[in-house]
Structures are given as structure tokens and as C-alpha cells.
Image 1 (cartoon, rainbow, N blue to C red):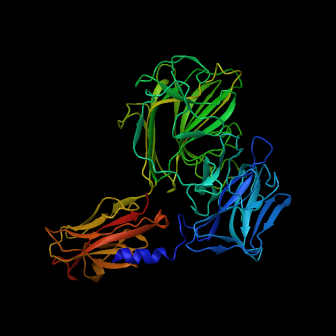
Image 2: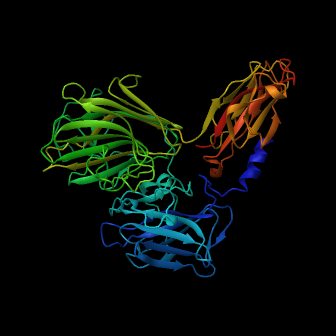
Image 3: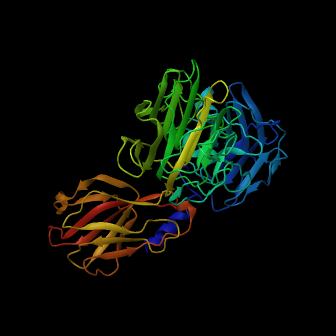
Length: 559
């Protein structure tokens, strides 16, 4: 059975082998600065394999542009259990295995690198605060981690891998701000489709299911001025209570939805848009989308005219900018967070909308959606409807989580309009997908029953319209699209959509023209994010070779 083949293949993969990396151990979470005396710094390692790993003689090294700042050589007999954690940090950090003195990590722009016993072979590496420069490209994976971070004590957010061991060898893809969890799992529960009206909550409460970098989002009555709502505004079209995402003491703030990030993501809400120009030299900006940002949500710069490069937003985001000229909103592909001349990928402006008082200000519907590599945004129009200003783009196929960033640069707070939203619909399906592509011949089609989610014992592939009662499903490690024309081998009009290197397996009995192959998906996180290509094959009198093929289907295993 193919399920046995899958399980055998899993034994060769790292446990929790999300992403493309084959590193047995990765830097899983870290914090290098905090709001007190830097007494909560730590680095957490995670063993991605199904066996204990001996890291005796391995070294963890911190570098910046001036050279080495610290080196920790692990003593003989140091092992990390299968799927286990190892924490190097200050005495106040929970679950530490090796104690370091306070402040052992630099507060700005440093690399953290894990070497094997040779001291030269890199097992895993990253550079943080890469907006200040990548001083040694060999010590960064991709763009590096672009934005700035300080852990605010009592809130405690850190740079964490999206899930334990998630590693694509691209720091900007792999890390986001999350609640700290040294010596414990980074994993968050998968979200389900959720519509929040906030009307059953209490004014002043934190919004559950979210966490901020400085303060958590708060429930407000938009018509009443209070410490979380700097001015009275009209209720949203939904009415009732709303939420602001704001640190009223000033500066920036980042907030994240506490759910597992995914590739199939949608967020839609009513958001209050202020078109009133600010005083000369003042600024106000926010971002709303799927990705991450830094603790301070440094000002983004969609036009590049302001010279700001430290923001670090990643992913697909709406970014609102209000200054002394008025307001605009931009749909941006922020890729891995880079900005400016030092960026590898940089931002891409997908579209922009000028805000005009009395036309498209006040409460407006805003939507952002990612489906695999398809990104889209809608501004204005009716909630849930395919209207409003619509932009689309091709984006990276990377797991992303929902976040908001807001920062004001105004005199006092009365002129501020922090990110204010109501009637929030969000969903994140993780990465479990069954995506059809191509076309079949002799009317043969391949469909799925359910999605290849972990633990789905009834997931199945169906070869439909088989004219002769014998059918197969082929599996491969790579998608072939466009397909290879099979006319030269006697199958005119048919195409091959998989490389077929895993094998060809017979379905169950063909009943009513349909043969079904049941593929139970085990509960094993090593499958998450892995893909296979599939295609139906059946006997056919319509081709010289007496075989016909279906469309292809890519399976993406996930939650």
C-alpha cells in the first residue's frame, strides 16, 4: 500500500521536517534584547530527527561586523533527545540547559550560528536585524531576519520558527514574532473559519486569541473616547463594539493572531480609514495582512520616498499611510521583509488607492487572501462580495500568519487614528491541499475525497469515468505541468502530469466507472508541507496503447 511507502519514506526524513532543510538540529527560537537589563536572553535548539543527536563538541557562535562576541562549545555527553529542545540562556529563562551571563547576545545586528565539531561546517545559521546590514552573507539564510526586536517583559514575544523545526533555509520565511516558549513547543493550534463581532466582549478587555509586542489589542466602543480610542468615530456598518491595535504611550506596536500559519489564508474586516491630512511632518501608518513584522513596527515606506528601511513587514499586506498631504492605502508583496538597496527581494507594489474624504474614507471593507501562490486584496465594496477595488498578484508559496502593525508620529495622541477594526472574518487552512491541474483524455478525471490533513483516515483519490473496470493512481515527487504529450507512445490526446517515481497503485474495484484509492494520512508532523503529484490511469479502447490518463493533482500534506 502507498501508505506503507509513505511511512517508510518518513523514516528517512527529519522529524518535524517542515520546509526544505535537511539540518538535524536548528535554532528554533531566540531573544537577544529585553526591556529590562537583558536578563532574559536565550537561544533554543530543536532536534528535528527521530533519534537523539550528540552535539558534544558542536559550537554556538555569535558574530557581528566586529567579529566573534561569544562562543559556546557543548561539553562531552551533550545530547538533544528526539524531537527535543536545548536552551542556552540567562538564569531567569525557563528550562535552560546551559546558563550564560546576561547580555551574551548583542542587541543589534548579529549572527547566531551552529557549527558541528569541525567548527567550520554550518548546521544552521541566521542574522537578525538585517536591516542594518548583512555583514557576512555566509551567516545568513536568504534575507536574514530584517526587522528589530525587543522582548517587552510581561508580554514576552520572541523570534520563533513558525512551527518547531520549520526550516526552508530562508530566515525571512521561517521566523515570526510569537509568544515565547523556551524549552517548549512553538506550535500554535490551527485556526478554523471564524467571524468575530466583538459585541459580546467588555470595553477595555484584551482581544482573546491575539498578542501584541507592547500591548494587546483592546475592545472599544468607537463612539466613546477613552484610553484605547483617541477620538469618537461612528460605529461600523456591523454596529456595536470594535477593536483598536495601539500602544497609547506612543511609538509602534505589532500584534499577531495566535494560530498556526498557513498557505490558504483569508482575512476580511471593516477598518476605519481617516482621510484628514496630518500636521506638517507628521505620519501615521498601519499594515494588515499575512506575514510578520518587528516589535516596534518601524515605519514602512511603500513609495521609497521617505528613506525608511527598517520596517521588516513580510508577506502580503495592506499598508495605510497618512501624512500632511492626506492618505493612501497600498497592497504590497513584502516578500521576506527586505527594503532598500541592501534587500535581496524588496517590496513589490501590487496596487494603491488614494483616500478621498467623503468618498472612500470612514469604515471600509478590506480583504486580503493568499491561496498557494495566488494573492489578492479588496478595498471597499460590500463585506463578503466580489466587489470593491480588486488587486491580484503571484506571491511566494510560504506559510504566513495574520498580523497587524501600527505606528504613529504625531504630536500628542488626539490626532492619531490607530488601526481600528470590526467584524473580522479570518481562516487559515494550513497547507493541506489537493490541487487539480491539466486535463484528462477519454473523459478520465481524478478527484479527491477530503483533503490530505494529518489524521484524515478517509482521504481518498477517485479515478472517474473509467470505461473499462480497471484503474490505477500514479504518484510522483514532482509536478509535471504543462504535461508531457503521450501521443508518441500511442496515447493521442493524453498527457503525463507526474514523474511517477513513487509508483503506480491499483484502485479498489471500479464501481459505476469510479475506482477509489484510500490514502490514510498518518498523524506525523514530518508530513506537513510535503507534496506529491498524482494522476489517474485506466484501461481504454480510445488509444492505441489502450491506456488513458486523467488530469494531475498535487497533494500538499498539512493540518
